[in-house]
Length: 198
Image (tube, helix red, strand yellow):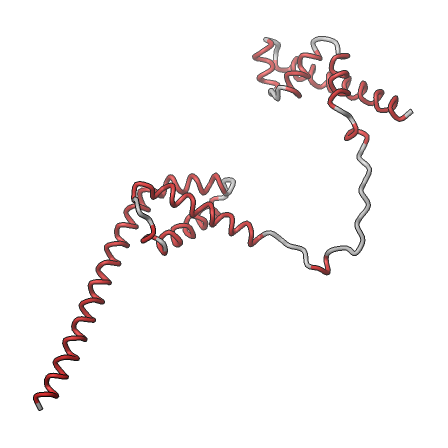
């Protein structure tokens, strides 16, 4: 009988120890979860801004991306060694989530979709055959003020408003000059293409 009591006590002690270990583990997970919630809540505005930038301002996709990143981060929270590096760590996870999402939506052709014969290469349009030198020579043939507005608009990439501020000419005048300069440039380049073909 003493042996049976000893076995019962022994199993009871082990069960109690397991329950205590389970409770301690549960408490540890709760502490980690609370800390993760605090850190992720503080980082959320920054992460949402990054997600919006990654998703090209698509709010719904950005929020989904953020949720997926936070889920992956929670699953790997024990791997984070320095809590001060949480935001860069989360941004990296979010970037990886975005790459995975893009890969999922990329359509890969099946073997049946690939043609048996290669398609013929299309001949470039006449405008695609214009070289940088052709364009430069055409611009040099423009008279002032058209040459200046073409350089500012097409080479420097300025808007009509910026050209107006830089040259001191009214906006409507700049817009007219740009239009006329493009028309003259097209005529000069068309003549150059015709001369090449002859």
